[in-house]
Length: 174
Image (cartoon, rainbow, N blue to C red; front, side, top):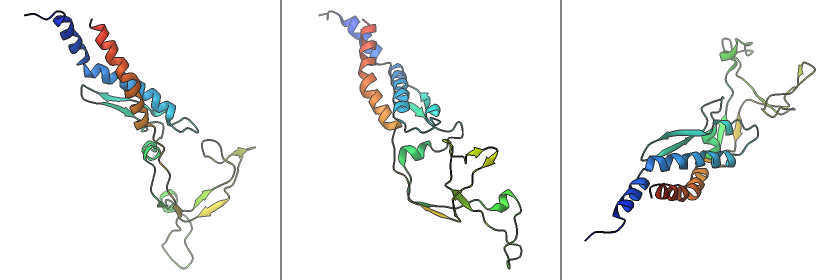
């Protein structure tokens, strides 16, 4: 007994078993979705979202690590409450001695506030840099909420592009 269309069925099953092709397509859609979902102020993080490695078992979407963007994971996962301490002035220059403590250098100071550019630098007007309005030696940061963009972007790509790609592979083998 023979089965009509067995060769066509085998060809279609072979076509959809090419998981690397499927994952590469989903990865491309995932990058687009992640770029759409990422919170943006300067769009610097958006420009670092790119395809990573892909093979028959997995595909990666990578963010950060370029253009001085080391905060991609903190945006995706959020941060816990933590203490921010300034780098000591000793690392930058030999500052004045603290009175009564010979050989000790004054620690650094954190400054914030004042008119800022979109990128976070103090504004410069007529060649004069604006001054910061708040100063502290340490800051108790409350943490930041998570703003996921990679995982939801990839999930939406799997939902939207996954089936479409399988259908394209299936129909292309007919």
